[in-house]
Length: 181
Image 1 (tube, rainbow, N blue to C red):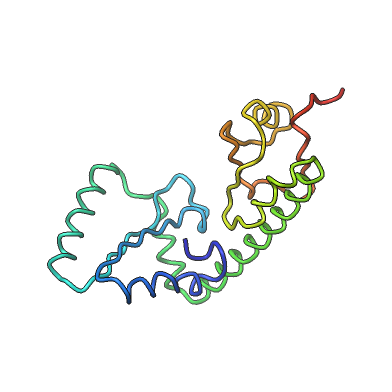
Image 2 (cartoon, one colour):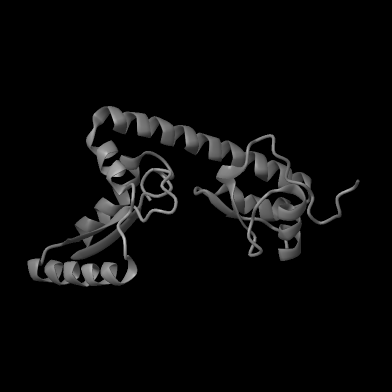
């Protein structure tokens, strides 16, 4: 997704290279996280190609897929178009996106340091390379349930956690042991 790693225009570089090298490229973009529109299906699909006939076929196939998946359009999707078309709103959004990116990066570094302090150094090292909002913790399903039940830190039993909801001072307790009274 453009914007998740660096700057949106820089993130599009790979897409542009692929579009130049390949006869046809399908690009799907979700805007729900970057625009904080969770619960709305906000984004787009782009098909880049040289054959008008193939592009019309792709358009028809995509329209048929969309009709079977969605019964209602996104409630707030027009907000995305408004932001992207207004220079002032675009600049404000980029500032907010940059701030969130830095916050998540700081949370990631803090999470890695705390996991290393708990003896999960090797597993925590992979978190350093993560760029998105989700990570896999080096805990068992029971330990993940303990994080949620005893410490209010939500993660799935498959070990997935949303780092954007953690604040730097939030503790990552040692889920391997029972909490002491």
